[in-house]
Amino acid sequence: MPMTVLEPLGGLTDPLDVVREWRVDELLGAADLDAALEQLDYNRDLRAQIYVPPSLGEFPAAFAGEHRVYVCVNQKGGAGKTTTSVELACAWVAMGYTVRLIDADPQDASLSAWLTPVYGDTPEGERFDLTDVMFNRRSLDEATYYTNIQGLYIVPSGETLGQVEYDPKAGRDGSLRGAIRKSKAPVDITIIDAPPALGKLSINGLIAADEVIVPLKVGALDKKALKELHDTIRAVQDDANPDLFVRAAVMTAWDKSKFAGKVAAQLRTDYPEAIVAPVRRSVKAAEAPDHGVPVRVFHPAAKATGDYDQLARTLLPAKGATAA
Ligand SMILES: Nc1ncnc2c1ncn2[C@@H]1O[C@H](COP(=O)(O)OP(=O)(O)OP(=O)(O)O)[C@@H](O)[C@H]1O
Ligand SMILES: [Mg+2]
Image 1 (tube, rainbow, N blue to C red):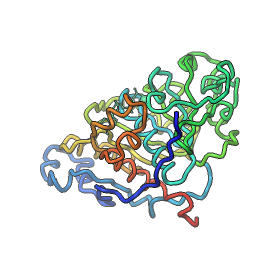
Image 2: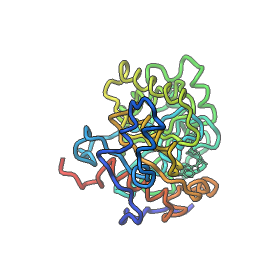
Image 3: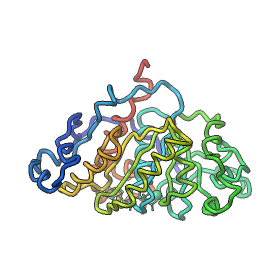
Image 4: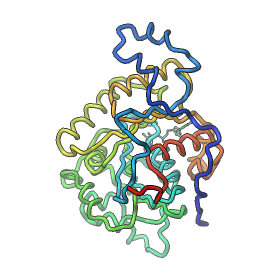
């Protein structure tokens, strides 16, 4: 398979407005949410826009060169975790970073639908994966492989990763955190793509990460699930990983609607520290996995590609662009 070199990010063709004061905030705590919603202007206040909380100060926050670990987590299936992991990874590679994706989803066609490890001459019996890491059989670096995208590495999940959930010997005490800390691979960013469950693998991801990204699909919103996710993240912050920061909530396959406004307000309430960003619905985003490539490669002009570009640049400066 030929190596793809991602082009540096160019100008954004259809950028979203970035707001630091958000009219959607007028919905927060409203006794009559629908009445409050009526006060908002549908076209102006509920349009696609990126909200950056004032608490964040300057953005993108400086990248001082330390390795940074993100986890994309949501126990709801089809929330856009894998799409967000892959597209942010590719955008950051295009911005000059070296990125490692960890496929922490035991499902068969997860990350591997978009990206495949390049094993080269490594014989089959000597190929390792996250399952080996979670069972302490191999180091993370031994399970890290090239992909056909230059600058992007992958840790495949392995066919038996699901066993981690119920085998008491695996993934104990947040062992993924230790494995990442011990890694010497020269990567700038590691992104963990969590599975659709709040079991041991997602918890290991939360314990290992510096920053959380919560993707969710507005149309498939499940309030109970969202609360459970929120409680889980806060519990990890209270206990195993007090430095964990919820950096962004991403509304994937976004369409303008009053309901999307309500969801945005819910996210503002749950994660006041987070950037809230939409990624507009795009048929190309839905098609890309069928072609086995990221949306950026399949259709660079797709709205979703541009939205992920902009989110990537809202989260981090281009590599080397900071004198922090
Ligand atoms: N912006 C978008 N527009 C249209 N479709 C999208 C968009 N983002 C993601 N999708 C589609 O939604 C589906 C679910 O996305 P994805 O696989 O990323 O979710 P997930 O949370 O990783 O799912 P799972 O829980 O099964 O791992 C995919 O078919 C994907 O192509
Ligand atoms: Mg997934």
